Image (tube, rainbow, N blue to C red; front, side):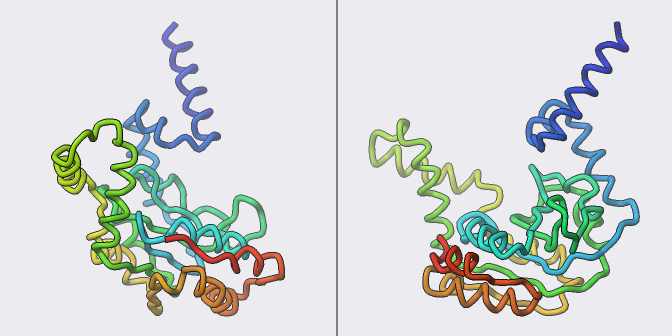
Length: 233
């Protein structure tokens, strides 16, 4: 009976892994979060081409969408505070659907093992960091939070209380530019800052043209049409 229960748990875990349902996996099996993170201490290849630093409210999602449109294949390193299992064993610079080209960080992780994992990286590549005025970032986060809690807000006092409650409990409110950068500064061969005007409707096409030219991607007519629509803030 115990063997049957164990095998069922293993089967469910493999099912969640195949479906990339990491958040559910960590909730069901907290120990797996630590085990999977620790897989990245095993000596691994280092063949990534670039690093992207961003976060909530800075247009990172839009920028990644346009990177994918030119087949730059960005790869999110973190999922629910865990470093994805065997993340550096992915086929960087490969041609399969599972291959990746660049490392993407959307936060400074609340993970005790992460700094040591990233400190083990030695291969230096260009780093791009998306920057935005902190007050604008706060407004974006607050607007989203307010929208989701609209049914709970019935007065100006409710709105004010919720405003400060949201600020107090947003763990990654993007005042982590320095700590996020510190994780990978030792492998940055050069640093480029992307401002909001570099990824908005007027600047995105030029930004992607420069990126494609630097790393040898093909910005074909179809990609140009997609990118020409600009980014979102």
